[in-house]
Image 1 (cartoon, rainbow, N blue to C red):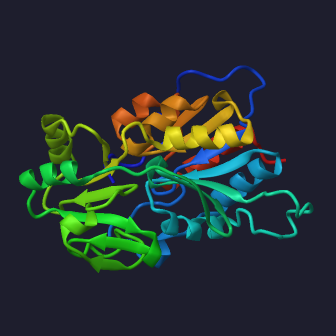
Image 2 (cartoon, one colour):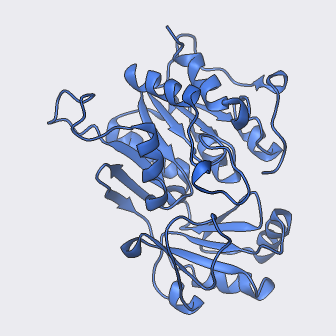
Length: 303
């Protein structure tokens, strides 16, 4: 997962919000923030600890909007919303059924925004990924390529990805068909390379006309130019009438950098690599030490 877990002694503060500040929105990454990443993840991987669950619900009960923001595709995020019980339509928690209290979710690194439950896509950005994918395959000809296909609740792939790396079924499809139409996100993965290999390759290729982010491994997400978790969260803020200065965002990956810089308070998880930590206002404990709960409890303490 990159750098090892940080101890509480390594936590640090940078810019602090004004006195009396409390988040109006809490934006949460999933993998590495709510869920501890493990290699060869299985169903047991998707487990939210009780301290994190309780902290999120304290924030929600205090009136904060909870928003999930991830590189995952929509169908890979609804199970996490269910684990968090955020919220169930018509539940006892919603005494005013005429009010739409469904969860806002920023998926595919900002390309797809939806409400849940039930899933209702409210905004989607697409782009032509073919030139960028072809450029990468010139350097990594054996790389795996995937694009979300919501109709099947899974992905179109040129070859199967390692078990646990993509949620939902994988349908083997030629690359030219995968990127032969506008897509909201494309994943390129080379199990035989490293994250550093992909960072170097991306800087050398230029990859004009698309934005990209490299993950913990040789994993690259392509997105429309200008689209990120930050742009997706701004869309949600506009819909809810929330100022970004009142947003607490917590994340751990390179795809969280824009979000951490954009939010009123951006907090990196303790195990985040240096470039992510430097983009944040503060660093909390690692995911293995319930760092998300540590930060949320600061603003929404237990009674």
